[in-house]
Image 1 (cartoon, rainbow, N blue to C red):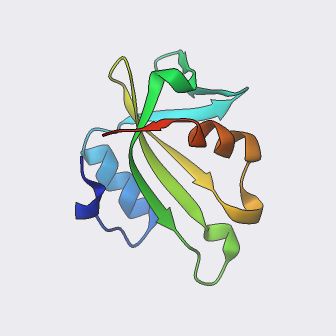
Image 2: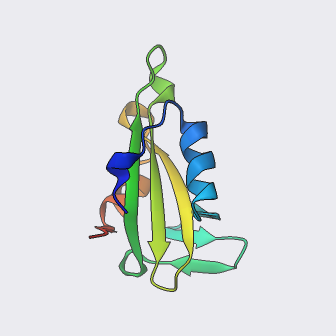
Length: 104
């Protein structure tokens, strides 16, 4: 899906709209894997692709700088990951996400 059609003012707005568009699974990063706790499944990078990316810059607070990733698994699960960037980023989580392929 072409993310150019979607512009979001806030992370919350992006998350709510993406959930309405089917990205309903919540992915958590732990021990170099993404987990879908609700489904009891873990994924390595080869099983996932990024379908949309939205970056938000905190105008007054650098802690508000974050990126929302819409991710789909090879098995068809669609979920979301939120990551900080800059000084507040989790280096291991960022490296994992950067290793994922982008959807065509």
